[in-house]
Image (cartoon, rainbow, N blue to C red; front, side, top):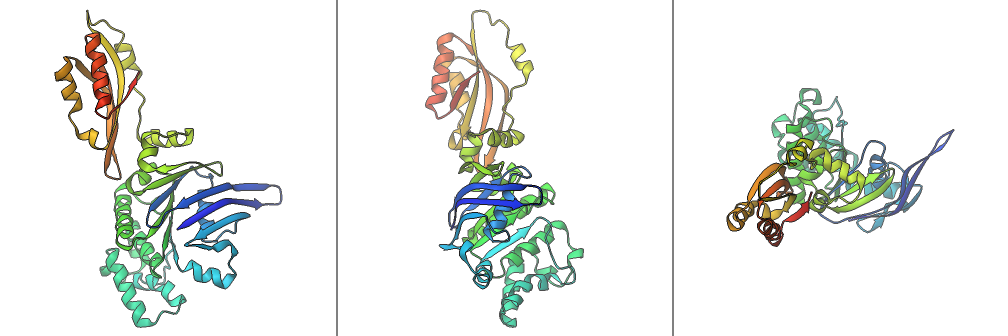
Length: 340
């Protein structure tokens, strides 16, 4: 659906040239929710503005549904933009218009007949759960309701792509979850391709199929979300993951482990698990089968796209053979083992 090749954007100022995007290449599949995550200044906002040509790239190509939008003339570009919806962090609603008229505004611009426009607006307000707010003004709405209006407006012209520019950054966590659920439902109902940018890995975790990590104007890592969470390859991705999933074991554990267990043997391991293995009683079965004790020192379990994953730090105590066979048993049952 979106194919970006060798995209570069340079801003020219009186004193210097600023490289905002550096030879970026990216592919977004039809119907997927694709996330782009990066810190402020990494280039993600420039990238999303280039996709709908609010910013003209210095060089490179952007194919949207088979059409290179960087080559379009102004009238052709206006037509192409009608199929690219966008929602913003600060909502960008017209304060003098009601909710109904805000959503209708794009339809007025494209010349949709009044009756057809009315039916479309009513359908969209029902989809975002705001049918009862049609005649109120933006100042009477909560932040989450304003963003729902923004989403309905972005969908007015039945776009093929929806761009989300930090759409949940101004919202509280509970409202963010409700907006992300709405976007996920829209994606499924309409088979709509959604490209969102964010600096919050929790947003990526809850909604995205795949993610690209951008840093210093370049794409550093791309992959499906579960792979990035379970095995990030770059320092930037690792820092984002660590912000919500801390694998570092408290140092006091290490101190406590310098102790004697009589004639027993001990090993400190980290057990990582994904998917079905997270729900299996593997640890319990290991203890019974090999006559070892498992001292749970640290760990967490989370979910990415409804798939459980996590890690546990264990001290295994028993005979040497029992402990070694226990670790092999865990690996044979689909768990990753790291000896600490």
